[in-house]
Length: 251
Image (cartoon, rainbow, N blue to C red; front, side, top):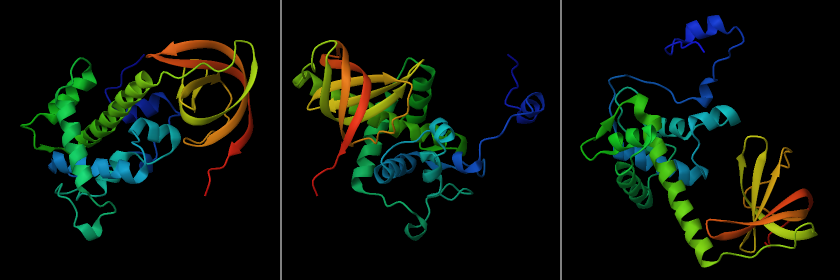
């Protein structure tokens, strides 16, 4: 594999079909001399996640054609000086909760070690580091997203330990159940869909795209493939799943 040393022109010449990522799915660049206050960046990231409901990395933004969280945070600052824009010019409003989230995320990042990414965020979050440059903005924003994900994982592990759930049906049985869609994750050959069925975990591996919406409850029919356990919680793997109906929440 040829290494192009980040030279985009050389890469385009060697790969005629190459199409650069659209600007709206990238984190912009500004004055290289601009200095952004790290605590302000982290707090604004927390605000962006609170308002938009999730952290979107640059990679996910390119793949799913969404605007990355880093770009949303970028809009709240002056690209030439790095100073935060006046309240009237910002689309995000900071709260005390956002600032607390930023402080906790920074303290968590400072203790990370092991991987290259962990080392980088630990260096950025170091107590002596007050400002960052525009090229570090995306990495700084990811600190909040990763901390929130880590906290969610810890809470989920604690909930599973308190309520390990029950297996659904018996292996080989065709069962009907009502469950709430939790998440989807790409695997090597398929996509894993995870559901919460009254505290019990149900997993379905498929290459189809059923279009589940996170947090939505569905009535499903599937065949029990196996019973297992993950992180102390019982789970049921099903296949040949069919959607019977979407369960509407009570108004």
